[in-house]
Image (cartoon, rainbow, N blue to C red):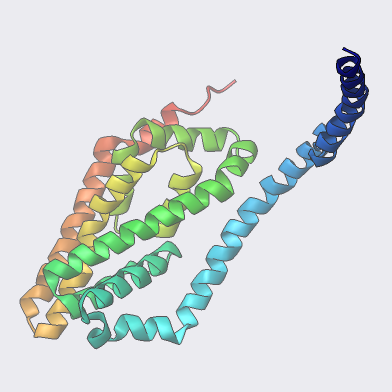
Length: 264
């Protein structure tokens, strides 16, 4: 009994000493939380920096890609691009990066027609251009959506309502129009509230006609077939007319006016 009482007294003496030490060690391991004022200031700085980073990298990337000899040589070397699966993967990777930075996909599509012919060239450039547009979409969403919602106010609200009400038809119509920038449309889709699936589906379908035109022209040069060039021109005109018809039928301009706030 005396031994048990002695052990109990030793344990009771050690427990208070161990408790605070453990709590202190845990407290030392915990990182101090940022005060609310610092969090707000950091969020405000990032809200300004993100659009600048997004646009800056797009511009720098486009300029660098235009002057990088290795990429241009790889995209123009039909012997390299035809080297089995590796050549196809190289083309898709290079064309995806090319399209992601807003460079004209017609150049890559022409190369696809020259290297692979009409059928395979159309499939590969459509895959690459769609992936590039999706990359631009997500890049714009990371860099510009929060800034647009905070700074653009009612103008952004009208545009967002226009796209999110008819997302697939809106993007498809804008892709089919003969004028416009694929990069700007990627940014527009990214900063809006449109979901990825309708954006990607409309981008894939809307890019098919212009991709097909450039592929036909490239394949026609390789084969010396004048009818393929004529077919490409006809396809371009048909896709442009379809885009204008969809623009009028969907009434995107009227939809934007309908979402405008009432005048006071």
